Length: 485
Image (cartoon, rainbow, N blue to C red):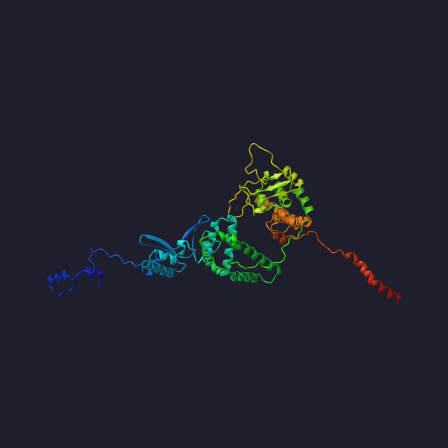
């Protein structure tokens, strides 16, 4: 019988009872659900049931690099006694998170807010946060503002790469860590940042190094390249854990030992610069071929070789920095130029002939200055000192000079930077490694020693001149004996 039949009985066929009997029965039988009675609301779950909390789980979001991001672990907000607080549940599993949320609420009802916060959220009353994740630590480092944005992003990417390869962080088949629009990159970062920092032990880092080296194969050149890459990643990532940085980190209880404690760099072979440049011929070719045809490339060449300046320094150097009287270029930090280190700011001695060449290329004064005419190099692009990625206003000029240098036999990946190495090698040869370190403005002489020898010139023992005399002295008796026989 349907609900309709139960609510409104319908008589069909022969009925042995009279109409009055049927009517009497209809009036005495209760209706199962009278049409006029409203439907009762479904009873909600009790807050002591874990399923109640499952629908109230969420992930905290925060603004990072101008975009909204979410942490990996689940959170819950709990309200009781006119007060509401949130709690990190330290898991991504909804069932486990819901059970923990229920336990927190049960404990709260029995013990009150003070005891609950002390037990489940010790950071709420000034205690350091436990179970620190990679994302927690990176956010804390960024908050210190100890690193330039571009430097921080580079160090962060290196750390994330080590973590991802150490723990095999992968995405679904249809996702990519390079998919910035579809969410793949966000998902990849969330998985890495959700890993607890204590899991990245020095042993894990050393195993990552061994796995990287093993993947390179047996070719000596491939092994050397892989080891250099490993060293680069480690230098950058461990810079996030320097003593000076750790003094600035607040509110986190960091594991012991830290990830890179005792981790040594790989032996990657000699990194000393081996000169393959004939500086005299290269200078003559630059003056003959670039001075008139491409003055911007020529100015770049002069600053790179004779002043040993870095690419970013050349890009933002200003005419006012040239002191023609004292033959120096006074390199200093400006609103456009952020120097690599504190020691990068210096008075660079430049040959007077070079300054004469630059002065001849100075733009004439005008009532309507060309935009950005204060810079030594011309460009139609404005500077972007706050760019989070590598940006050069004179990139087109650098590309032209690099192409020209490659045509002159400089096959390095960064031909322009090869000019800085060449002048460093020349100074090391003529004036020693300390003079080269000072000229190149290295913050530590070990950097200079790692890349430059004391001598650029080839050294030989000078004993070859005795070779012919020695041979004659030995062979002469034998010849005489043969003749006598």
